Amino acid sequence: MSSKEFKIISNEIKELRMLYKNLIDKIISLEEPTPSDKSAIKKKEKIVNESSLLKTLD
Image 1 (tube, rainbow, N blue to C red):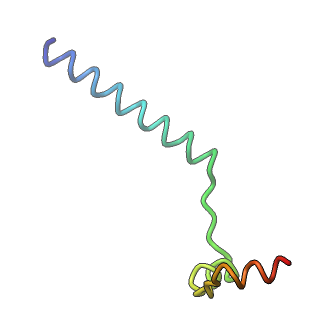
Image 2 (cartoon, rainbow, N blue to C red):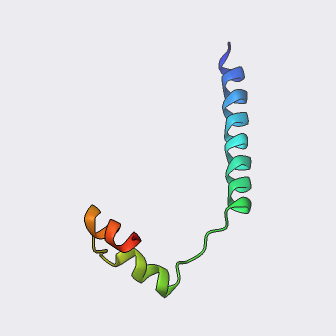
Image 3 (cartoon, rainbow, N blue to C red):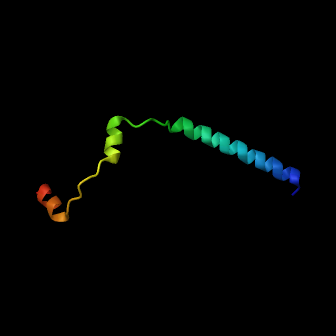
């Protein structure tokens, strides 16, 4: 392959990447997390052991 062919292929790959990125951006809209979401992400959860869990489920 010549260098001209490699450049053509490279440009096509760049175009495909751009198209793919635009498609993903349309499908998956990025939303800012709500204050509730932010606090849930930062909040430390209490981890329970198995016996406590089974007691609760009984």
